[in-house]
Length: 576
Ligand code: AMP
Image (cartoon, rainbow, N blue to C red; front, side):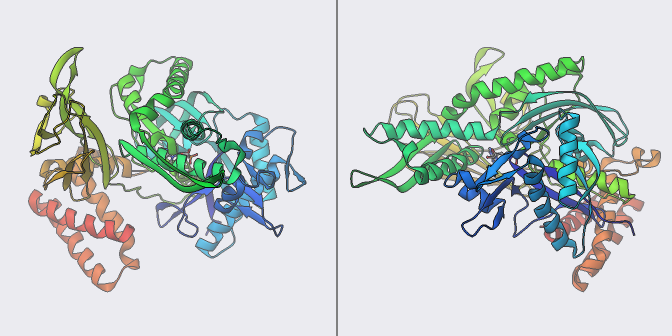
């Protein structure tokens, strides 16, 4: 057997290691975590720390901690950690060594080969430095691939049709946008642009500044002088930012933050998503400008792009998705975890080099957008039924999203909530799937905030709740068939499209219905599990495989659908 080759995403903020096993791509976790923060430090006992522990001490012991070493790769410089000098290659090697050890612990054998990803804009010197870091870590870097190439491999490798993709990658410290051409597993980067100093860390900093301004309202408090309090605020800011990706408001609470003139100072501050979005607007605009420069570099316009792929944890910020939708006119893809996508692509490249078969990256996504209607605008004119999407098409299931709305009349005591499925900006052109009334609201002026939460699970059950923010009064309904029979097929198609990596799309298969292709795909996947499940599960699975095969042969759509659903459930349970 060939040596194992691991795939590594050596990132500025975070790093990951992935592997292809039994045809499946997986990112390897260490103590339950798949993401290793790219921090290296030295502790009180002169022991080397890598990852989370190093990150935790960074604000308190910056002189003993190194972050974002990737920015220095290829430069003839050094960093000082606990009084010792290190080259950027050496610090990167410490991270690589940890990733190698994580992979070795997982497979139970020594590993000496890796595919490592680098930004498309990396110069020869930066690539050479990355290779050297690998060598220092005891890894033969069998290939270095560009990060957008890796991401595009995950999304488009199995498709024969040529596709032009825009890879929008916003991480913790860097932004990269690339236009790539993908055909039959070959990815070509046509152009790249970006900003080496723009990312989620900047967003955190804006929230930290906001908190600092808030605390300064109490005279004499200069939070910067308290490093432990600053460390707590920085962490709270990042956590608040993440929550705002799913909620319209977040409450930032830090008790006993510091002592001021003998009295404890507590932090309690509400931050609205809209306020946060205003804070980061300039940064998002900068990414859009860079996107247009990348398009220009590839001699294209937005209409030439077939798909947008979201990479990097910061792309979970909803207004980014929205801006891309506004610019390109279609929903970007983010089905594969944007933090893990590049490492998965690296592992897939490694498997290709090794001649291994790659199965599917199965994800459950919603093929439709769900939202509500509100008073707004349509084609620039005031309109009472503007569609407001809440859960977007291609969101990974299960998913839970909230949005805030306001009453528009004084003393408005009730609100009718209507839930729609579809993409049309006019809610009335979408399919209404439920409605309810929330009554006995407070007798207050217009602007009373109602938070609407949509929670869609894997079985297509949609829980909807509306909550009056000021009183906590809530009304909820459950819509059982939010992804109905027909849509389940579309779900399989979406799954299959993403899952059909390196699949052999021969002509006969191409003529089959999407549901049949998905069913065959599912059988393959189930078969790869058969040796690794309990006897009971195995028996159920074999029966279901037979039922599906039978359904396919006899054209029995109902029987097929039921068996597919049940087998999907078992696989979901096995994989989670
Ligand atoms: P990466 O370097 O790709 O791992 O991205 C890390 C960045 O993504 C950090 O700045 C995180 O704070 C940010 N991030 C992770 N999850 C979320 C989220 N749910 N919403 C907004 N930003 C996030």
